[in-house]
Image (tube, rainbow, N blue to C red; front, side):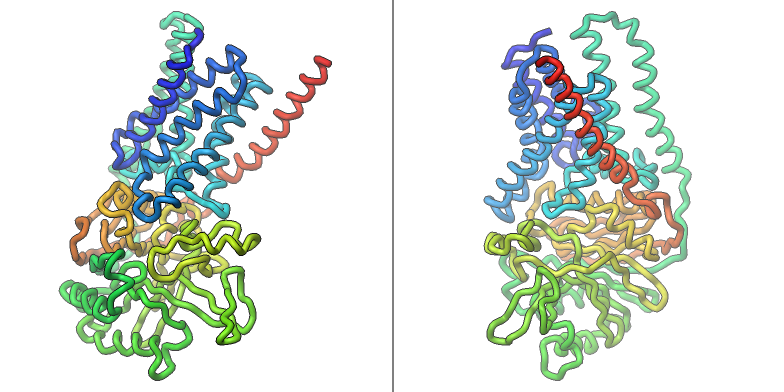
Length: 538
C-alpha cells in the first residue's frame, strides 16, 4: 500500500491529536493513548517500505510531536511566550530525533529489531529527560495515567516509565494487526493469536492493578496535617506587596483548622517571598530575625505547631561555592540564591533547597559552561537566574518523624522523590505555586502527578498550593479534600506515616538505566551494520 502525501500528513496529524486528547485535562480520554501512535507508525512503515528518504519521516514525526507538545502544555505560554515557543520547538525536535533513530535502526537491523529498539530508545529518552540540563519530564508517556490511579498500582515496581512501556507495547501490537490486514492483505482470521496476545498485554496489567487497588491497605501510623492555600496573586501581589501582610493571611487561614492534635502545618512554595539570609535568623534587627520573631508571636494562635513553608533565601560565601554563586562587587563576596523549604519548629529554622529547577526560570541550561546565557533567564518574580541546589536529595527530621519536602517542579521527578523516601521519608509534602499558569490544564496536570509519587513509594502526600489544587493523596493515589482554583482555603486531615519501601523506592528507574545502556549499544551496532552494508556494495 502506497500512501499519498496528503494521507501521510493526515495520519501524522491524527497521531498528534490522539496524544493530546488522551493526556490528562487536555481531553482525558485515556484509553485512546493505546492507539495514539498507530497512525504515525503506519506513516513510518509506508516510508520504509517505499524506500523514501528519511527526511520525509522527519517532517511527519515533527508534526505529530509538535501537536503533542503544544496541545498538552500550551499553558506554559502564560509564563513566557518566547520561552514557551522555544520549549515547544526544542522538545519536539528531541522527540523527533529519537523517532528518527528508531527508523535508522529498523532499516539497519530489520523490522522486528527496529520495533523493539523503539521501546528501548523511547524509555531511554524519557529517562535522559529526567537527568540532563534541560530536563522536561512533564510529557513522559506514563504520566498519562496520573488521573487513573486504579490502572497503575504496579507503578510501585516500575514507576512512570513502566506506563510508557505499556503504551508503546500496545500501540505496536495494534499497529502490527492493522498492518497485517490492510498493508499485507492478510485475512483477519489468522490474526487471532495476535488478538489474544494483545488482550493479554492490555488487560493483565489492568486487572492486576484493579485487584491491588481495591485490596491494598494503607500502612503506617496516623499523622494530622493542615495544608494552607492563601491564594495570593503571583503576578500582581505576591512579589510586590508586604510579606508580613501575606503571612497574616496565611496564619489567619491556618488558625481556623489547627488544633492541639495537629502535628504539622504545610504552607506553599515562596510563601515567604522576599529573600532572606539563612544565617541571619539570630542576628538582631535583620529581616531573617524579624521573620523569626513574627512566627514566635503567632505560635500561640497556631498551637505552637511546626510549619513547613516555602521561602526565597540566600547565603553568602567568601569563595565561589558552586556554578550558581555570583560575585557582588560592593560586598567583595559571593551570594547564592535558593528556592527553599523551611521547617520552623519553635524558634529553630531548618533549610532544604530545591534541587530540580525549572529550565529557563530557575536554571539556565549549560550556563556553567556558557555564563552569558544567564541573561536569558525568565523573570517570574522573586529570584531569577540559576539557583543553588542541594548536593543530594534530603529530608526533614521533625522529632524523629522524617518527611520529604518536594518543591513544585520536583514532584514531576519520580526517581528524585524515591531517593528521599529511601532516606527515610515517611510521607511527602509538596509545596507549590501553580498560579503562573492561570486556570488551565497546567495546575490540574501538576496536581495529578502527586498520585504517581504516592503509588510509586506507597507514601501519603500533603499538597499545599498557593492556588490551584491543595489536597491530600492516599497511598493508592486517590486525591482527597481537593481545593478549588483561585479560592483561599485550608484543609486538615489525617495521613499515614509509612516506613516500608517499595521496589521502586529501593531501586528507582531500573528500566530507564538499563535501556539507556542498551540503547547506546543498539545505535553503535546499527551504524556498524549500515557501514558493512554500504561497503559490501562498493
